[in-house]
Image 1 (cartoon, rainbow, N blue to C red):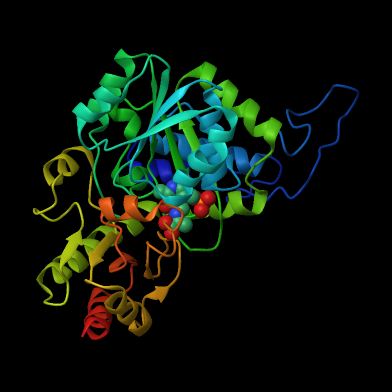
Image 2 (cartoon, protein in one colour):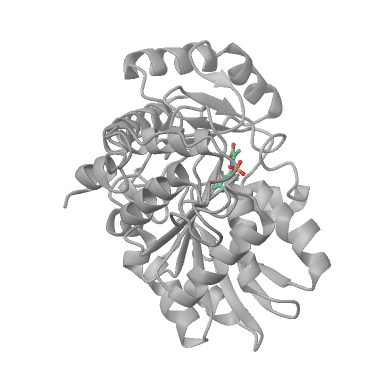
Length: 377
Ligand code: P1T
């Protein structure tokens, strides 16, 4: 089955009670038992909910995974993955991730005895050198938020597996339409469904997809024990969102490339970060591993003052955190999404005070470019 057919049909079985073509929002906390211990497979709504199950089947199928679990946020999905390691274990963490992911390791997990090192995972030799006897996991984001570095998923997976470690990939920036990490050897895929999967900036959620049965049982056990589940209404919204994922991502790709090309030629822009530009250091790898370059573009304006002028003068793009919705959003990583990353590290990565990130929406491209041009000028 093709991607669009899977997106529209996987998990979306007509409702057995009524024939409803759209999966209903099962807004209930519990389920009637016909006799003690006799039920229809649903006991309590933290543990099982039919709307959530439909979404779990849907996104798992899109990622080419046997198992999938929907969480209350991208962060709770990432936290659930990190419950596959224990106190005393070491994790190799990509040196550029969403600021909240770094903060989770730096300020929370470190209190529970989980060791980690930040590694430039775009350099396979650096990944190889970072392994310790207690390394149990490699966690990468590709392309990264916000400087769009691309990691060779197959290369990293081969090294990690040779050391007996698991690989987790945050696939939020690509969505399964543009990249399916499991096909490249990755063990576990995480998402902030808040972004492209839901696609309409009206729900916060997360997802974990994987094939290993034992690890899947543990993720499900954590989902139920900790209880950071996606609500029935949010599950409905994301399930509605994935039906149009293919058409939306096609347009995000087109508009993303057009914005990157425009910015690369603009005299007020010093540097553009977009894997679809031939000048991007991992352009060839991105071409091989991804089915498109996506809608996220970052660019260097040279100073905080210049960045402020752009951010405060755009009229179609909205100054806001988040990404992946149909509307263009523009943000300042240094003070917004990556404020929790230490100043020196931000400079090293290119997250300067002049860096602006745009989540290119699916509005008419002429309008998006006109808007950016007038704000830059
Ligand atoms: O916000 P939440 O659904 O909890 O997802 C966290 C998260 C995880 N992974 C990546 C790659 C992300 O970009 C995010 C959230 N990012 C933003 C809010 C942002 O504006 O970058």
